[in-house]
Image 1: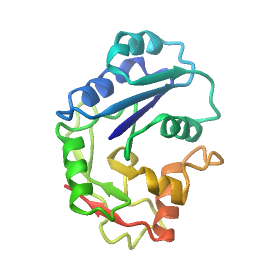
Image 2: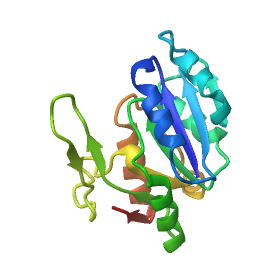
Image 3: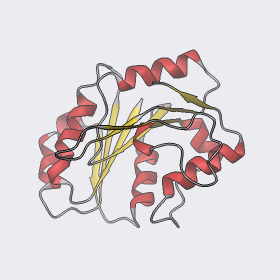
Length: 186
């Protein structure tokens, strides 16, 4: 399993994302960090964790879609998850995803719930729409809760760098329309 974190000037939230990956109880997690030339202390934070990060780079990019694609290109795992600097993985997330792919070898995408946390407010759980019936109106999934097989990226393509927003929605819609197999894990 490869996890990619993309960041630009995310020093305030990146450490929690990094720790959530490093604390996964899975010995075979490759961790890639793609930084878009941060100027706020992000690079120094990445350097503090460099011994635990498989690969990282800080360089200009053509936007978040490009950063996602750079991260995917650097991975070697068969399963790829992407979290941004202000996201984090729940404990046991990687193990649950690995088990789901093992239980359904034909799966292209494994996805789950996403929790939204805002200061002073309660947690809001965003459950995906399992039947995708509204996919042409809104994204049924949250990219931080989506893991994709490398072969699916090879078959259906990566993120379209023409999208500065909704690039994850476009990717999921394209995969769905092409017949990718999606599997939900709670």
